[in-house]
Image (cartoon, rainbow, N blue to C red; front, side):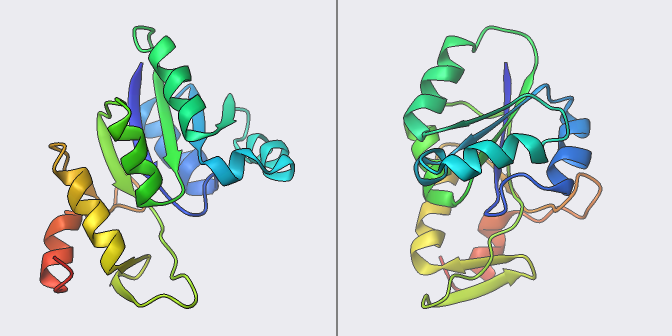
Length: 163
């Protein structure tokens, strides 16, 4: 299975289901987040937001196991992490992604953040996590949709003085 990792605090929404899933030919969405997976309401609602695409809402450990058991199967999966730390944990546990894209990272109240782009707020801790993701050999894209202009996140973080 080809894995496309999408970091987005909104999880499943129109841009994900209409544009990204179509672009990658996704036949499965996996939301991988421990808190989300423990929330019965989100576990029930997120698959409904997927507009008919098979959806799993799993803890990070369960998502890793699920994908490793299916890694040789055909198809594409959009693996959604709510934040960069969740994405890093997936990679540390052996998930190999074809692409990594940051969709939306809204500012979190009470944190000191920098708006790297209009839709991506980054703290100094987030910047370190993104750098660690890049150290796996990945280019981290920042497109909201597949047709948008692409920026490399690490370059933007350096320009903003976060790295």
